[in-house]
Amino acid sequence: MPATTFSAPALPARVTIREMGLRDGLQSVATIVPTAAKLQWVRDAYDAGEREIEVGSFVPPKLLPQLADTAEVLAFAQTLPGLRATVLVPNLKGAMRALEADAEMMLLPLSASHAHSLANLRKAPDDVVAEIANIRAERDASGKRTRIEVGISTAFGCTLQGRVEPAEVVRLVQAALDEGVDAVSLADTVGYADPAMVSSLFERVLRVAGDKLVAAHFHDTRGLGLANCYAALQLGMTRFDACTAGIGGCPHAPGASGNVATEDLAYMLHSMGIETGLDFDKLLALRAKVAQWLEGEPTHGTIWKTGLPRTMQREAIHG
Image (cartoon, rainbow, N blue to C red; front, side):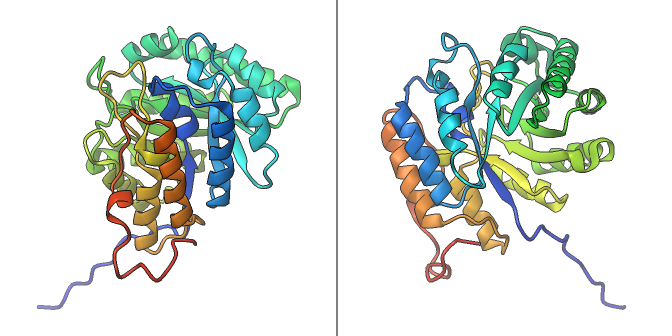
């Protein structure tokens, strides 16, 4: 009987980790981190090799006082050469502020869960799509070069609604693309996904979005965050969202815990021979600062406790 051969899927040679701690991480904690500390966070993340950072969100300060200084943090981030500083905007008013600030990219949330959309944005998903169209038109009229990425949240399920149909995710992705957005991403907002679900949904969305599907966003609520990242890697995804110290969550998604930890994801990728451009020692030093700034708040992650394996200690995680 002839021997069979097996070819492992080709993985990307390089991956970008987008740091979300300053927005997704801080929006779910009670502690208000001083602006000076946030600027240090941005600086230290940059020094560690990070070149994409979501620095905050243009939302009313009374709703999220933790993010009230987003304009100031964004302005500082824009002074760092080669750094793409992005902001989340929930509506047209927020988008106008992002345009005025010359943000390089704004991320617009579009929930695939009707219940989550009403709780988070007080609009049904199709009404959000209509607002996205208005934001794109406003961007075009302004002459600004700010890119628009639509993040499909609760793409794998919702703590409020339960099951989210994959067909609805695909429909909303197509609707956003039809309105002329530059990119889309998929988010497991509440940590319901498993690797099989990730493979199935990303394959379906790739057929519609192609190279405009640019990022994956996983929460580690049930311990499958890194496994889900690997499933997306196998389909060629090269941008992943993560949070220093595994912080994060959604105020309108009960039970959702932190994002995949930046330092854990960087370790996994490096161990697999995938470059990230990140310096592991500097990531851990930043993690220690963040944990201090958020003293009393829950943090997550593993590699900071165990350290690198002996087989890797002589080499730096710096691709």
